[in-house]
Image 1: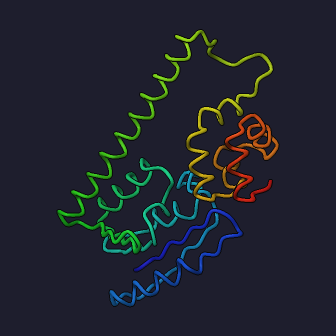
Image 2: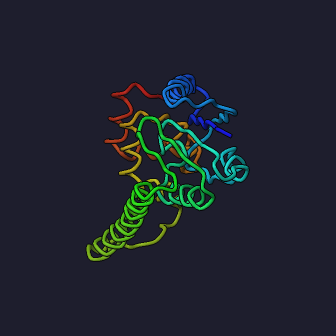
Length: 210
């Protein structure tokens, strides 16, 4: 069986471009798509809470899964690696049309999968290291760590994730998507952007509103 998986982050996005690309790719490979799985959700959601999770459970040996990009499977490298590892173990083939990756039981695929896993582990360690260094620097400067009386833990979380949020804004992710990713309300995000002139500047320049 050949499955095509399409994911968009918001209902405003159209999966038609993804579908066209997969159709063209399948034709070039002489592959017939047996089933399409399309969903609208954040890639930050765990696979078990998505249609993808049910799809992965149903896949069997020699089945093929086609996506336009590996990032459609998840927004985190760790979960991507978990998915690819499970598929390799079950001898399921993954094709990524834009990335031009093929993950099967070949040696090249295993080396590529190992490289992805190594990058994921390095990324995890770097994030942990940067967090520890930032906390140590703030402590050295006399900043009182921990939650201030009356402060919002969700606002503090946004402050800690500011670099990632700036990246998401530059990539033109919607405010709704950002709020969904960090499980916050639009009101909380309004407070966050009011406290950060650089965030406000980026959003105004791309004519975003909430």
